Length: 192
Image (cartoon, rainbow, N blue to C red; front, side, top):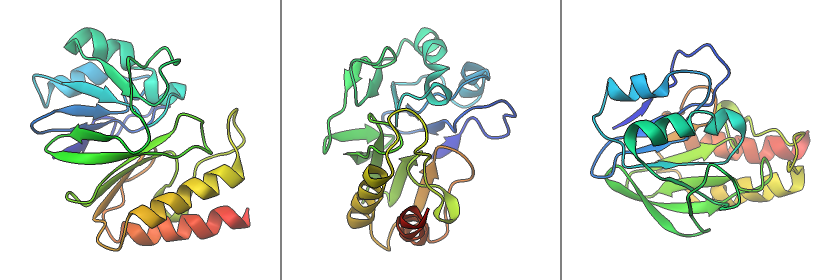
């Protein structure tokens, strides 16, 4: 079960996905809303926080979740204050009841990760790819369009048409033919 606990929040935040199961994990913590109250409505425990990247809108609530649930935070770069444990490119992490491979996908931010489970048919795309072929900004510090294109292409080569769900950093999740949205993003990123 995957639920966006930031759904309906009007403040500036990223999505924050609670992945329930054997290992209950929060993928990104969001910012500027009471994430702890929303988590407590659904679960008694959170086992870990896993970050797609460390932009403030994705990590603003990290300390609140850490304090409330006594969890540690996993991300790509240990040099970031929010990150307790590193996840390397190609490493496997358990989210809920499934194993996901971590893909280092810079271009929007140097420490960006996507998480893909072939068994579950799920991709957590962070701010790399969005609905309808939109893609992450490259005008922020550490942003780089050619690198972003390489990262999108890497995701495109990793997933296939059986992809059932793509959960993104902002906006709605894609649950109808998300592979098509990844293909669109690969093309669109080359045009701008």
